[in-house]
Image (cartoon, rainbow, N blue to C red):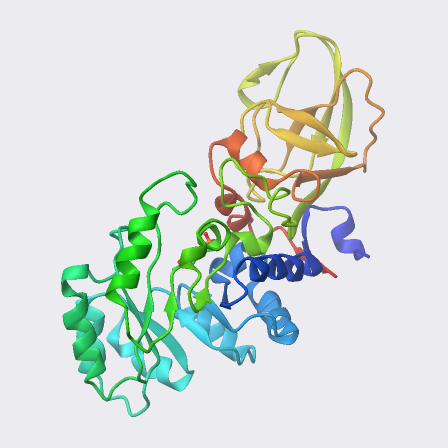
Length: 367
Ligand SMILES: *Cc1c(COP(=O)(O)O)cnc(C)c1O
């Protein structure tokens, strides 16, 4: 299935059927809602253009969401015709003609953007999403200025009517946090009786807060098969990992009690064992801060990292009974080893791990 070049190196296998499966699951949770597939940051490291193409062909989603104008322009250049929403809107007023030219929908989250839009001399009307700050306090109009802003937008000919509405939760992944329900309420109150579309839910919102589904859901991480919740596995949620980061053993070594391994000699063997060396390191995006004990899947069984992660290699303790050989398969995360679990050991989140693979790691797509 893999071509020769990728066979002996480290690569990320991207499973397109898993992507389709996860979207199906998300739709089952929110059957009344359309899907905006969030593919910012190179589709969370999964390859934005390839996934967008796939999503366009499969017709499973209604629109795409990105964080940067550059991402949207790349999509248009690649022939993606699906609606695209700029989740943070435009950063420069001088970019507005590009939005019009490429039919990019934009969030309006600030007075600066509002003024830029009102002062523009666009001839085409932009589709806009007015952002309410329900508690994240990062982007969006404060509830006290929301109605005034909405009135202004309803009375301008510069935009496509009606105005649509969007908000983003700060704690939807915390299932017992009481903060989310009043945020949903606030949004519903502020947008009541308005004709525009409403969108509130990221992945956690889709899976845990049905009241937040509304017209459009905006799943990112769950679409890639990763659980957004600290205490609920992707398996429990019936999600399948889309990315599996794979590599191979490049050395298998006898290792005696008392010997250390790697830079800084940070780990020393307590007994005789066999160590494996894997061709992956922080030069590939595997975090250097991964501590000894971080799980790695070798020939289908979990073994711990020992010693420091280096640029091109990591070492694992295969155990004294190891029969593993040079060339054997290794999974760093994905199928058989959820990236959430690896992230927890490293003290980060799965979002960061999948997003931070470097250009050295080829993406290999399979059905
Ligand atoms: C990134 C993003 C999402 C997707 O969040 P996930 O937690 O990955 O599902 C949704 N909405 C907005 C505005 C975003 O920026």
